[in-house]
Amino acid sequence: MNFDLDGGKLLYALGVVFALVALLYFVQDVVFGLSITVRTVLLFALFVGFFVGGVAIDRGGLGVVSFALASISYAVFVWYTVSRYEFGETGIFLALAVSAALFVGLGYAVREREVAISLRTAGIVVIALCCLSLVLVGADVLGGGVTYETSLEESVTVTAPEDVSTDRDGTPVEVSVGTATATNGFVFTRPLEHPAIYGCVAGTDDVLGDEVPIRYEPSSYRHPDAIGGNAEHSAELTARVLLDDDVDETTLSLERDDTVDDCDVTRSEPTLVVVVDEGE
Image 1 (tube, rainbow, N blue to C red):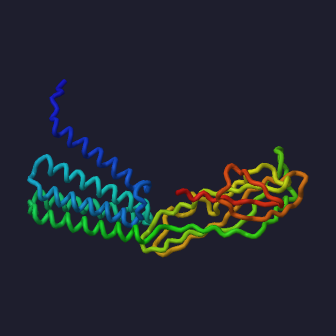
Image 2 (tube, helix red, strand yellow; image 1 turned 135 degrees about the horizontal axis):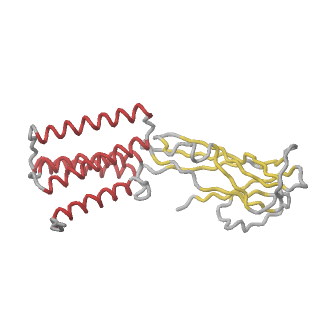
């Protein structure tokens, strides 16, 4: 077996692999808090910058690496764009077809036409891309993020159904307790992720258990995972209350208290305390 490896090529290959991992991590929306729009533009800017760099650099290992990084950046850009925006099946097909034509054309221009870009011109392009990226990131940060508001009813009446039979203790009853509204006050598209929410019952024995599950309707896997610029998205809040078998109906006051921990709460009257975990 031949273990005579080129150390430089190995390092280049590792660099490309780590670049791919970094880009995939970047588009997971877990770092920097950037909008979907800005992330998309930054990925395309990386593609342009690496491609221009590959053309400007003398044909060699570094030029190939630059083209590889450009290809990876574009592939991640296309994947991120079609997964975040509602392209539809036809739109995805067109995006892939255009991408194929683009790379065939670029390959022809580089290999057959021997298109050349001076290092000075490449530097100007890279500086322009960096300036554009800084402007967009600055506007993104100053534009603010998505705000989430919760509007609760003053009270809710929980009534046991007439024809419910269960082998477990208690009768589960679902009631609407309010609405949650997400508002994007800026022009860039942003990720949409409603905060975790649950309820705590206090001041009554009509409801079994202290904690009451509350879910968004439509549920998280049915509502969009992105919200457009200057757009609003509303969801109904539905609580699943486990009513005591001996109780036909009970009325609960509703209030919000995000300081409650592990449903350690007491009230003098029947109350459903809604806790919204908005994170940091």
